Amino acid sequence: MNPIQSQDKSRFTQLFNMVFLFAVALFFTGVVFLYTLRNIRHADLLYEISMLQKEKQKIHTEIDNLRLNVANYSTPDRIEKLYRDRLGYFPLRIENRIQTLRLPVLEPPNPQEQESESSKRQER
Image (cartoon, rainbow, N blue to C red; front, side, top):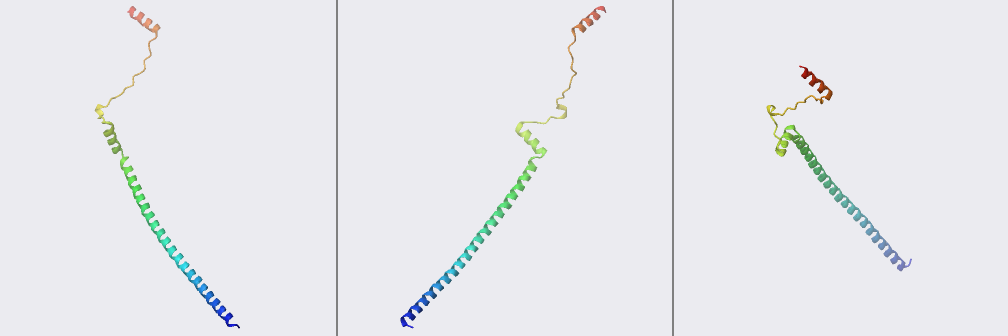
């Protein structure tokens, strides 16, 4: 073999080895980068989940408080108190209540009946 060819081959082999090592190093660097990126994203998602769970718990607490307020404010005593305070309603005692009586309906007398009644009166 020619010494020049052997030097070119050894240079080519050295260049090939360097490119191969660079590619392997780049590959492992990419794997480490993606692994780190995945862990960061995982941590972000866990943080977001915990924040949403806290918000959910807060909303459930608020709903429970609102239900308690509805139950408290819809009692008959509370409604009567608001009615008295806002509309000036004062409940009447039993002895002060107005009683309404229905009277029987009276039909107007017939003119012929009036004449017969008046003639009967005159006869007496």
